[in-house]
Image 1 (tube, helix red, strand yellow):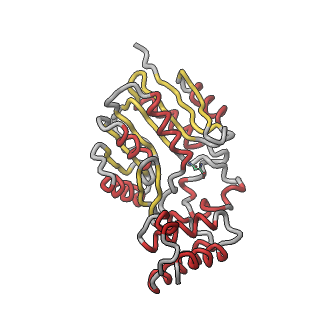
Image 2: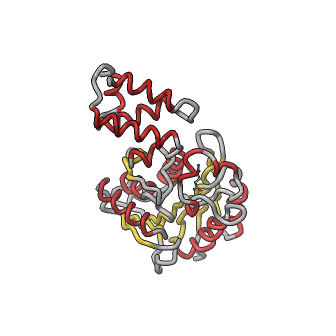
Image 3: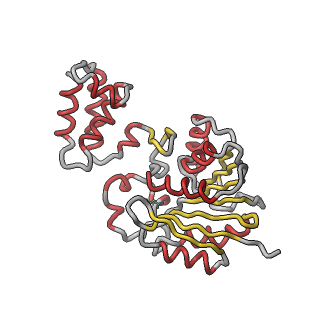
Length: 279
Ligand code: GLN
């Protein structure tokens, strides 16, 4: 079968799903081991029988809802390609804002950074790449996530990242940092959002937190000041409706210069707080 025919078959199969055209292209380019632009350039080239079998199987799984990132085994984030698995959240474009704001507000060429709940390692590796003189500690409480993040550190050659198994700060010891970042679970467990799209396949432990979704953010903010150098900052990703609540949590714990940033959809997404040790 030709590339163009394989694509139109898949688009029909996926009709009614979220993004049939993009997904068909992503899956076929993956099965061919080529870029998506190859598909545009060579629509008349033949897909081999083995490639077609693979492709059909992936299209069926996609039709049943499996995220494209899990089917391909990787996801782009920042300028990186990251291996993914059902043990962690799939890195989201929203989270790139956390990387952007961290870089914007950082004032050191060699900051010490801690990424809590690193999952694939996305935030830690992006920061380590942009700040090659930084020292980054990335932690996750899930053993499979720790293994995955280590693989991604190796694949992206970021020697300045150490990955550790830790439930938030539990295994961080007395280490202190200039910057603490986190994309913790924050979705309210009753949210309809959890029954739609890719999130149905992602681990609940990476998505929901307590009755209001803010349990882990409270824990992180309460403990972070013990692990911050003076003038250090914490940046946390949160839900679009949690900006004011998260800013309030920071304020209650004595942080200053608190600011909430909006994502590309003009929704509250990241809150920053700074810590000043009394001198
Ligand atoms: N923003 C994420 C989503 O779209 C939520 C992930 C999280 O809880 N950190 O699913």
